[in-house]
Image 1 (spheres, one colour):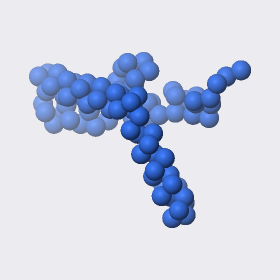
Image 2: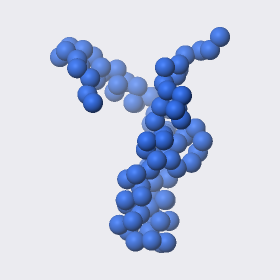
Image 3: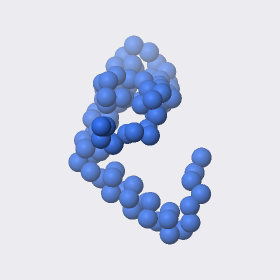
Length: 91
C-alpha cells in the first residue's frame, strides 16, 4: 500500500530513496543479487523446465544476511522481528 504523502513530501522521499539506493553497499548487493539470480536460473533450467525455473525465481529472494534463498514473504521484516530497531545502535 502506497504512503499518502503530499506532492512535496513525495518528491523529497524520492530523492532520499534514490540517494540510499545508489550507495556502494546497495549497488554491491544489487550486482550480487543479479549474478546469483542468473546462476540460479541456469541451474534450475538444467533440472526442470524454464517455466518452472522462472516461476521459482519470481517467488524467492536472496537474503544477504543468511546467504540463502528465501520466499519473498520470509525475507521481509528481519525474520519476524520487524524493522523498528533496524539501523540504530543498541545500548
